[in-house]
Image (tube, rainbow, N blue to C red):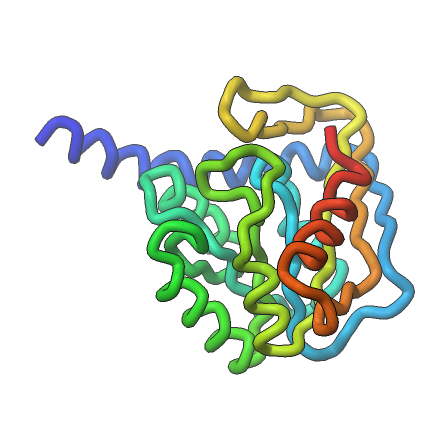
Length: 207
């Protein structure tokens, strides 16, 4: 009973506080955006490492004036907190893992792409190993003939948490370099080649 109460309290308190922290970090840093020359009008899949998730909503806003996206989030307790923070940024969520019982999540992701939603995915989430690609991003991209854009945020000063993903928290009063790749077409690649290409692009600006 006590654990249930503490979790409910955390779900009520942490998301608004976390959202304010993210906004404070963003507002107190200088920003540099490195964007592709062309931005598809049709839905795309945005891929970024799990440890680089914190500031990505702000990069997404550079692509869409009116957000219409769903982010694949773990159905664990920490995923529930992240989902509520995403809500404050007007982003939807799909709960689950593309590696453990992933068929349901992939079906929801494919359905959302068909409905015109962009999809955000952490290919090494929700539990790692760090910087190791799951199949989900490639499956969705190829089944819906959807291009993939790789995201990264590189802060000049930051903390890294002692978690499996070395979760990165930028420090205030520095510079945030946001990187987004040109749209990547995976349609003619086999699974391993497609995963290797996405991983190569993701590792270009890794901390």
